[in-house]
Image (cartoon, rainbow, N blue to C red; front, side):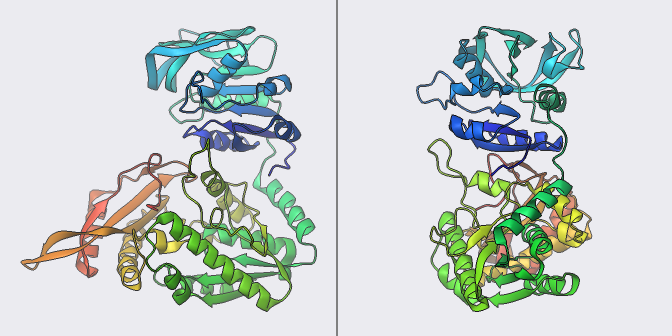
Length: 516
């Protein structure tokens, strides 16, 4: 994936916050990417990283099936930062000792810094105490040869360590989370102090390098772009169009799973406000037939993904000699669709895990390395209007994954009406731009209610509103009660077939943002 001159490679041991490490490094304008912990030494070396980060993870390094990276990475002469599990693995592989801690540390802890160089450059030693975030049940009991403690905490005599002659550092806390108040400083000291990187990863530089890559790959060939009207596909289309101009044809597929008025709005926007050539295809009947009787979320996503590809290939044949399909796959889509340590993926994204192996079109995915907020920044850099960039994310499978259970025309009708009310009230109240996403979900259950002195037995709508920066983690939005009340009252009064509205107060993790 990576062709960047300077990069930090993160080896993932299964931490829920690995993606945050990548985000925090990129915030410093240095490129970073995540790979599985068992990445081969040859591949790692070929990437020529400026630094390596070993992430946290749920395992214990002394477990018989613990995830272990190749210890040869310590022979490459590349700076290494171990975080939590990664720190303990570094110690164990280099000759230290890790054991189950008598007192586990979870949550906020106070750090006493003993050494103010390296990753703690610019900070003060005790008596100054720094708030950090811990999450571990093991601890380093004996440092590996050549290592010394650089910080302690209440229950960790080796809360941070450094090698006295090699560029290896380890921290028991998590510098990537917001609760670690010195986290950005620690990462910045590692990136610029130990790895000697330069802050050159910007959207301007990304546009230049990506346009050259697209032009080199496509040559004089024809490209079609899957255009949904969402941020990702809009930015993809704008970027590819800048690279190859009229060699690009955009295809908008109405899969019958769009929100009320969405299709008309998208087509009007692109035909009036951009120079893109757009073909629209009404495939409502086609997709509803494919989804008939399907209740499993993974099967839904894959059928929708396969359906899109079949339509794109058909349209490509009608256009003539089209060899390439551009689509808005993002880095979180790629990460969540990967199998980790033998476990199932979190979900197959319709444009990653849902693609048939024998697809006839060659993919162009220029956003595959980017997080959502980077895509928005890229869109503005490309000159797209704010109305296209700051729309809330809408999933490729559309309302198909916001209807729990079987998708039907009748259930889509109910959800669309509820969704209109949610968006209207969020926009009228000024909360639409304050949250990451706000939408309605139709549940596969019915509950007893009373309307007009009569018993009802009807559907339940769940409201999902979350705050996030990049969709990798999210927290439920603390909307005003009055706003929640208005949304609930309107849905129950205006949408026939609904007699109950509930509010989802789950964070990600452990829940995902979408319900399927």
